[in-house]
Image 1 (cartoon, rainbow, N blue to C red):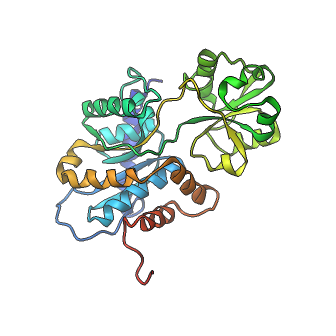
Image 2: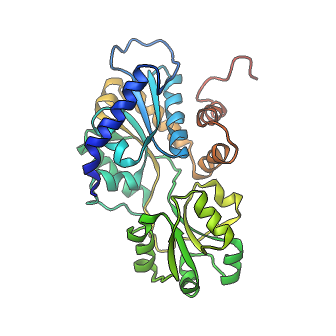
Image 3: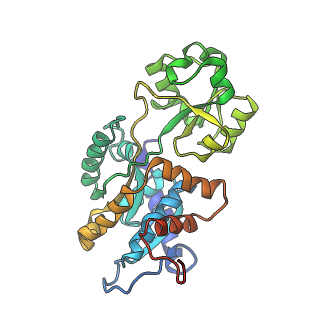
Length: 319
């Protein structure tokens, strides 16, 4: 189903979440310095339905709250087909996005992201503007598709890059999310760009435990994960180099409503850009590990990192 057809359903679902937040049964209104911005001034930060997105929502929201902006977080709202239309409709005001995927969604697939972060950001900024949105500066951090194998498979077939799979692919099962079959940046792209033909394809999940379990058990030999997935290091997996730039840039990029940016002026964007400048892929992978492997809450991890970066005050009595 084309992405734009989800808009009405998105508005209903997210509106329900917002109403719950207003009644005190949902959403997290962050403490902040006193402000006289008036009614309707709250910056509601929404997230997608996976741990990294929730973590990023708290990172940006808590940095804003520390600078005196009135902020509410609505975590775990759903997929992009739900969250981005809610952003356009004004039900949320800010979403930490991924540049390539956001460009594809906002342009309805008419503009293709490339592996060049700067070019992808420029296209996203133009597309966002046409939707009444503003794309803040992207972070160096990317969470892009990663083609991975176990260390044993890499050693057996001498694999360092995706082209190295050419000989081994007919003997290996590829695993990834069900939609991978039809995605230009997944199985179709591996076939067309690299000429790979795998033994078969096994649908697993989107960068989750089923994919990792299938790799560990040998049910699949090659998998699609994501570059910030802490499971890659924890399971000693090998990320194969994408030497032909199949994967688009997916830099973390806060996207905000233009009316909200205009209300608060350049100071709001300055805070977002300051946070983004400090987020590298390695940093984000480490923060994800604390949430997904360490079992710590996303907001706890977000605040700990912001304190370490001196972007929010230390706890009272802390050294």
